[in-house]
Every structure is written in structure tokens, then in C-alpha cells.
Length: 131
Image (cartoon, rainbow, N blue to C red; front, side, top):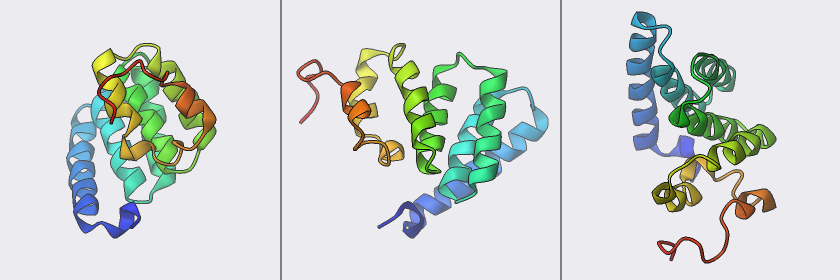
């Protein structure tokens, strides 16, 4: 099943985008709704708008970890895999240890998971939460 075949995920994506769009209208300088809306747009299949929104979010707040993570997710979902890996690699140098296992199995990153560079981000035996 692809992400677009999951009605619940698509309902969620539409709802997130609608809410993000309202907030962006009221607070255009706020990176948070832009980055969340970008992920929703990516799931909805609107790659051009998703990348436009994530570029805006990164321009506003390039050091925000959530924005960086959402950027990696957006680029992974829309198929810009090298860009997704580049952003994820930079992000992993700053992420809290308790997030490592979550990131390793994150569905938004499934398109880059089979890349050798992806596995290199997760040293064997370092994270005990893995099963």
C-alpha cells in the first residue's frame, strides 16, 4: 500500500495542510506551520508546493531541528533522495539520542532507508531500543 492508498493518512494530510495554511496566512514568518504544511503537501502529492513551503521554512529558521527533520521527510517523500540524505545527515549531528530509534524507523523516510549512507547514520549496537 502506498501512502496515497491510505485514506486515514490522506485525511490527516488534508487536515494538517488546511490548518497550516490558515496559520501561514496569519503568521507568514513562522517556520513551524510551513514545515508541517510542506510534509502534508508532500503526502498529498503536491511536490512543487511542498518543496516551495519547505524552502520558505528553512529560509526563515534554518537551525530549527523540527524544520530540518521535516525538510528531510519532504525531500524523501517527493523523491529528491540526495537532498533528503544531505539534510538528514546534518540533522543527525544535532538530534537527541532518544530520537535516534524513532528516526531510524520513520515512515516518512522510507524512500531513503535502503541507501548505504542512511544505515551509516546509525552505528550498530549504539542504540539499545532497536529490535
